[in-house]
Length: 159
Image (tube, rainbow, N blue to C red; front, side, top):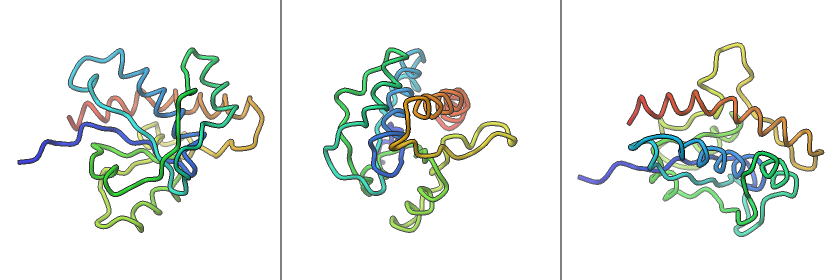
């Protein structure tokens, strides 16, 4: 019997803006949780990522404003191994989820949108702030922070 996956994966396009911010925000949130949820690993990747790119300057700034560092982030593409080792995968947009399900077989039932577990009236997708100003990145960060409590509830329900 193989061990169950103990990692959470966040996915965006290039793995330099949204998913690295989500990864570090979730690491911060899990630091306040007891095991087993507190010991989950967290990573991020991109559906069109080049390996080794740093986080975008405004992503670094947006997280620095809340005391979280992205200075050491390096991008990586989504791989079958990353997906297989993930208890749950959280995408920024529906197109990311569709790409993963089309590219990797069989499709996983554990691929969700990051904002999927929020009340129905809230927006589900997190738009790409790449190339935008710092307030756009801060809005992106805040939409992720809003989603984290609902993700924690979901993770607790499946552990």
